[in-house]
Length: 191
Image 1 (tube, rainbow, N blue to C red):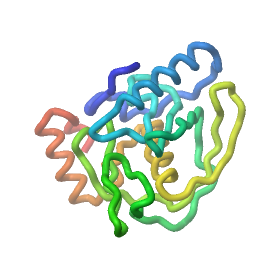
Image 2 (image 1 turned 90 degrees about the vertical axis):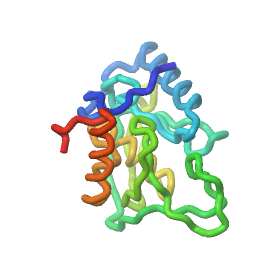
Image 3 (image 1 turned 45 degrees about the horizontal axis):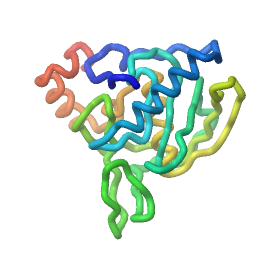
């Protein structure tokens, strides 16, 4: 299991390197990342990128349902995306991080395990097609919609050195960055 990397660690703002070796070491990294993701609470994590545990590699895991399987994505890239964007909302039949189900649709506030206690409305593509490799190097491709699409876009951003707060409105971003700077969790040089 790994310790979570929090802002202002520079690794969160760097482009991660591609995975070239599909070996026992990679499988151990994935196992340790999976244990780290499973151990998250308040909020429960639904995705984890390697930079969030201090590893500059293009790997992320997703687990949209607490009792579901963990997906492993290595060297992922979006190969197709819808033109339509939305701030996702979910019904009571869908799990949304640590939020309790509601009867009506509610806007999803996106957050990040590496930027604790900060939430915001992020506009994401409604649908993305992702290509990636698994832990054995085998190539895969799949379309993601709704909440899973949000997760893969958020985690892919991590691999490109982008935090979700970069997608917020100018005013919301400025308020959050000022709060993080005051708490010494973000550097002024990134504004």
